Amino acid sequence: MQKIISAIVADIGKILLGKEHQVKLALACLLSRGHLLIEDLPGMGKTTLAHALARVLGLSYNRVQFTSDMLPADILGVSIFERDSGQFRFHEGPVFCQLLLADEINRSSPKTQSALLEAMEERQVSVDGETRPLPEPFFVIATQNPLHQSGTFALPESQLDRFLMRISLGYPTREAERALFQGVDPRAQLRQLKPRIDIAALRKMQAMVAQVKASESLLDYLERLVQHTRQSPECSVGLSPRGALALLHAARAWALIHGRGHLLPEDIQAVLPSVAGHRLQSEGGDGARLVERLMRQVDIIAA
Image 1: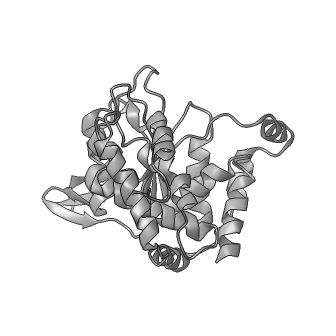
Image 2: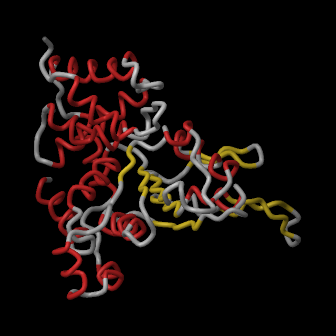
């Protein structure tokens, strides 16, 4: 299993140079059955990462470019009357796939953004009074541009909370960018990617995440982190029970990716910024700074 995970990370790393940590976070998110939000400037490789994950994991893939005039039916699907049969026939939208890339999700209106809520939480969509299940597994990878850019709508808290992780790719290092200049076009390399696993193997890996053991002392540390976010005057909104479980699931996936069957405090700390940064709120609105203080102020071993 460790060889397969290493091969997946290496394959994507050939396209996204110098982003091994972010690739592992994205993989941990999907192994935890969560959804991923990638926030960064245009041209940083957000779409490339989503497409590469779909290819190496052997998942069916659809991409939706969100715009201000997009309607919920453009994502979920619509019933169209067919004259020959005299009946309405439902035409599935792009959400009916295993990995949906919601590109620039914050360029659409809140009404369209909310159309994904049921799909992300329940793995189903309700259209025309009928509930339709989505394929298994089902993941959403959404990208968004920074909110200071024109034409963007902030995601509501209820939508943000549906994403298990939020990550940022950032600029490449000088060495990685030089290798990019001298190498093959990433889009050409992307087309050459082959699946490393099938759906059955992916489900097995997801089941193994739940089997990663967490000791009582480790759970005590997790509980202290969660309680600190709820009691600290610096946090106007702390981690919810869903956020706390997301942190535990992501840490277990991180441990599995690194070949361990048990949790370490370092596993929680590795995923904490990505899991909690978009959930914690303060008057300043800087979740990343709150996470940094949280790790400094909460001891691994209780006093």
